[in-house]
Length: 162
Image (cartoon, rainbow, N blue to C red; front, side, top):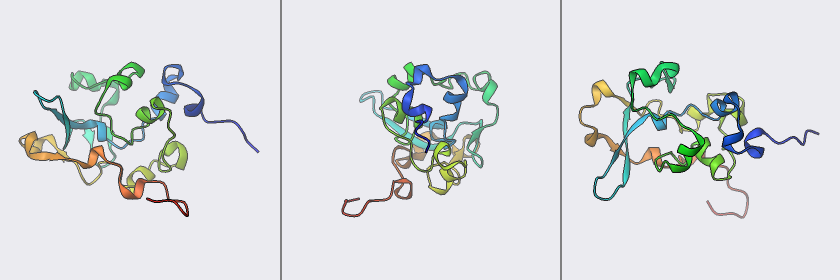
């Protein structure tokens, strides 16, 4: 019997090597959606508009290594930034690990396949609009990127409420 815990349960974000860090990304693309911040209230809202580099089919960046050359305001996640950012989706593995929580069943590190993030309805596949076709961001405000899809939730155990 294997009693070795996976790295995300034993290491803080700061202690992860590059491969571990990168593998935490589930490939949902939610963080690559444009967000709007209200100047008065500081409230952040999501839009369904994807960054121009996001491939909305695969939900991966078209040029991840050089993304900041193309999109200078692209946020490079670091442990310190994860702790400070208020717009990471509730499904984000970086956020979950930082909060001491476990990954969901559909995360590729758990399921063994990157397709489960799409099957669970967590990814932006089929839901995002490209920057070129969007127009005004204000016309594309949506709530779903900040929510956990019903089919992405863990199954309810007998005797528990959903």
